[in-house]
Image 1 (tube, rainbow, N blue to C red):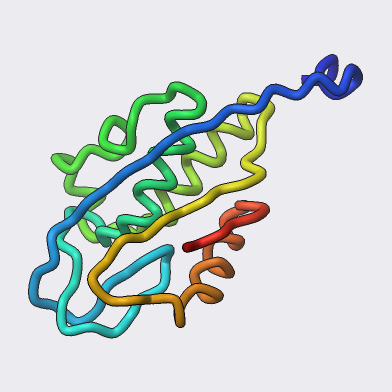
Image 2 (spheres, helix red, strand yellow):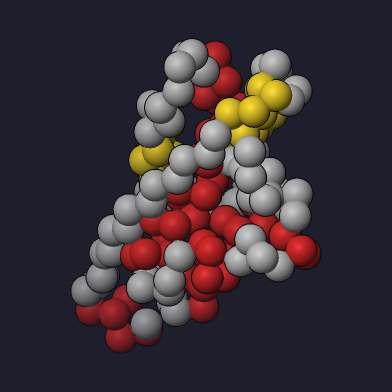
Length: 137
């Protein structure tokens, strides 16, 4: 890492993440760590935050470190209801342990209703997890 910094020969990697959860009866949808009031929720073993799951998978993919299910298997009861920021922090720490950093992420959330009024809160919540820049569309 020191040699790369000295020579300014940075390595850039890109990962791609994708996640889908079914809507079921509930009291809110969690996206990027922000709970949005709703009469439904996303079904999942953890908090089912599809945005953080997709981002976590993208980061893990960029360093070829398997997917979120390999690190946090749904069959393991300790992850029942777990907040997805734990998964994201784990992925970011793996990148840091390899001498890297997450410098940009681009997240596209596809849903039936617009959630753009929550965009700033989602960006702020992601920034808490050492994501330097984020753009949520």
